[in-house]
Length: 469
Image 1 (tube, helix red, strand yellow):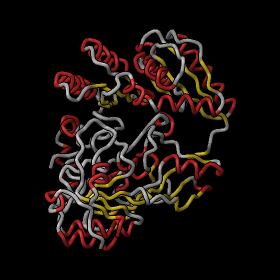
Image 2 (cartoon, rainbow, N blue to C red; image 1 turned 30 degrees about the vertical axis):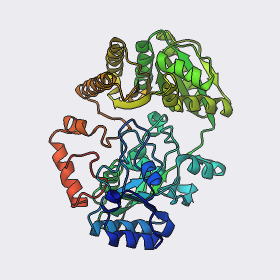
Image 3 (tube, rainbow, N blue to C red; image 1 turned 90 degrees about the vertical axis):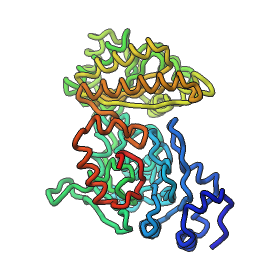
Image 4 (cartoon, one colour; image 1 turned 180 degrees about the horizontal axis):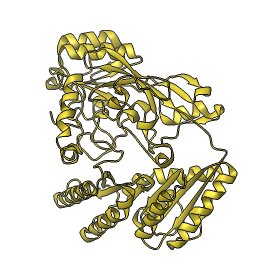
């Protein structure tokens, strides 16, 4: 084993010498104590405080993950799975130290079954990598959270995105998993069959578990045929209520729109500035329609009629693939566009999700409180499924701003819960929203704790996330 990089003695001493020797012998230079690498693996895209692990293990197979977890389990050392670090609630922070397992080098597409519309991949494959691999097959994977996240991480956080209104979330699109459990044993859940009534649905237990029950190393996913016709359009509205009511009526009418994205006037101004666009600065919906040529035309006409009833502008079209890509990239860059409104500030990204019938009420109340507080907090939303997001653009060193953001966030979450919603539609819990889980689930949290103890009796799998144990 090569001598480890110099790190503070207090950090090195937290890992037993036997563990350091075993992992060094197993992985060689792919096991590191380098301070810069540890720091990189202790933070995500959120404002939440980083917490670096004591070491990072770069793995290339399920067998290597198994060996690392087994070694850590013997010493009761925490294990944190890491994909691309694009989480928004502190998922990868090593709150209790330990070893981060970086899965980015497990990036092979193992098998594409075109006739069955499914694919088997290693957990480090990213969504863009998968779709590039599928390009010539006529198939695609639609879940699109914006960031080029790893698909193992997307499964672990039950990710969603702009296409969820038509194609669902990771919950609906993960068919099976390979998981390394806290004792180093390996299990396979689910399979390639489209339905099963055999036993407990362990796949759904691990999808959304955020690495707290085991490390996902392989994923089997549903695929879809690339639509014959795709059209995107932008429509502005006089008020946010007009835009949201358009969404509600569209969904209640059963129109199979692929994407309906809301941006408020603050966010649209930021997008125009950041992406060099020239949309009217009003509350705006971005639509995308998938299907046959005739089917898309029918969807468009129905949605046009609804937008007109609610004061919507004429559609501004993005028909060519290049124009659509530019439009959706601008939408995906909304977070960075918001930060650019206040150089040097940080972003506190948060989300909730409510039943579609309560969406207008929830957004209107939230927007009113933001205006009254004078906070800069652009709003965007995958509103076709009742999910919207805020980015509080703040100075973390300003206690008054932090207190206001905290208060507004708590009020928004409790407002959503009171309306039958959830504290997070897609960001997940991490440690950023851990205090809201009990408010949302009540006594069911005790059942979650029992599940956690059954899978991870020593609480070594990403401790401090989702549940307080």
